[in-house]
Image 1: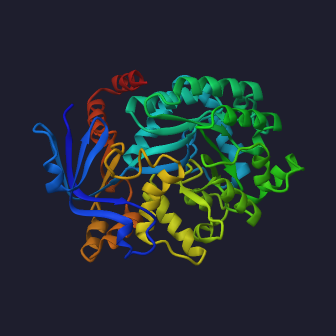
Image 2: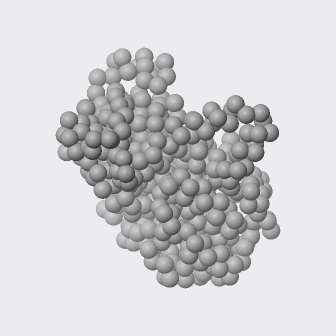
Image 3: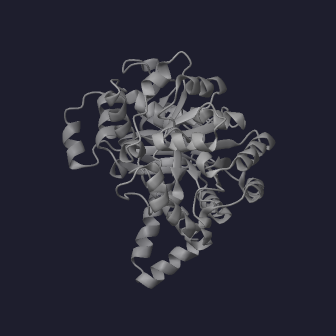
Length: 458
């Protein structure tokens, strides 16, 4: 198969960077090269060295002066909520009942699910994200739609059918047994197919009965290699309601702990209001607290204490995420910009190298898939984002006075969005270019023909 040789400024992380001067924490090449073959990175380093390893017919693409980084990773997002994003004026539980649950009833329709899954993955790729841990709706069809679209694009994604059997409208409820049966069928069909990963997905303790959490626990025991994802300690009213439903639990985390749902591949969205005992329980089991800053600010849920969680005697493993549609943007750059502000409100700062570590290797480590993605190391899957720090007039003006890589990264985080994403490679394929070509083609059709083309893709 023909190789692809990319040229540009390459940046990849080896570990958490303690300071902006912690140069051994990252690998940066001012004139770097990446040799891609069969969806993998086969060589990385100085361009002059990598070029020598390329075969004679290698396709050469010069991205200078832009930055090449591992594709960005989103550790928690609700793909059925695309038409809920930017819904006004409610806290978590009211927001779910007013906007989210009615919207998710639409996903009984397989065609609707396929359309939204396609648009969702288009959108995250456009913003530079190459892997997402996604919640589908309660309907098996929604998970089938998501995985089919993901597989067609050869993306490495993690997803699961939501399990919820109470405290929601009839149109978004399953039963303990149907949740188990549907999840088993989806695992058999999709987990390990191409680059797909299945996550056992009880939405949260409020919408799952004890019987259903028993079923989630059984699935985790039967499939110990799978991820488990749910929500924890996002909102004070949520915590109080959970403890009413589970009166024997000592705290919210204890509910999941009782059912054996904590572990190194367990992803807990939000984790804002954890007690010290709860944080210890997550740390002791290697469970992951997922920081969703735009959502936490938008819904008024609270401030995730990122630096304290990292520095405590028993530190937490942390990932970051958009949480769309409680979150307000599909961009992981915008997510870390808001994350920086949340951390600042807690009296701390996050330096730009730490932010980009978190968006790439940090999230890959938290999702236990760093051997596949999150770095530019030879052997990694060729998921790559190309970032342009001069993408807008305001960014170009600011870059006139940016003298260091740290300043450039902070500018990208603070002012960057989808316009700063020049290209995205998914398993070595130029996904943003392919998308632009397809959209250009459909825009020349009459509206009815364009809709027909869209449906054919589904």
